[in-house]
Length: 217
Image 1 (tube, rainbow, N blue to C red):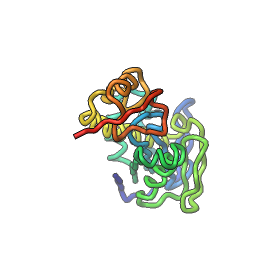
Image 2 (cartoon, rainbow, N blue to C red):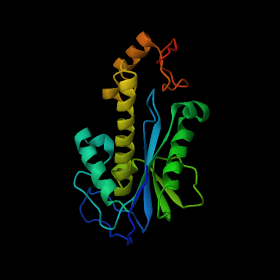
Image 3 (cartoon, one colour):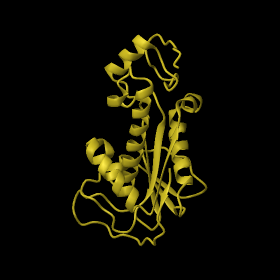
Image 4 (cartoon, helix red, strand yellow):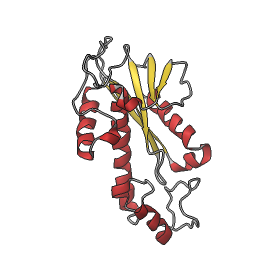
């Protein structure tokens, strides 16, 4: 799901306001983040975002720190104003096959691949990443609360994944995914115990002590 705008980007100056999120430290720098690593069901999503010079918004922050309503508002702003953005998902079957860490990194690679123009460097949320096509990268723990471009990526990854899980809730209504989005809540685990696992559950994760399967029409 790529988006793009053809504009020049100039290196931004560091902000002087204490606590303000930082701009990217050079031209054509993409921020990358993922959503859904800890879920029991559904894909892991990743986004890559290149912001224009001087982009900022008072609501912009780590997606986990703001409300759903504000995330949805920011999603539209970011998609409209970013120089380039993309979201990619790696689904549960592949997560089970290659593990969640590798799936998260693969989703980031797939998102970066869609960006036009190609970024000259990457800012990655977290402490693990595999180099993508020799593009220089830097891993930053809690980067989504430090850099604007990573915060923007966290917003897109979260909102796109949440939207996907709302669709899955329509298919499988017994797991409270319209609220928990696949995370391991009491209601989600209770649904598994009562109704079994679905085609989108991650079978390599600890779902319940006893896993069963069911057929869906």
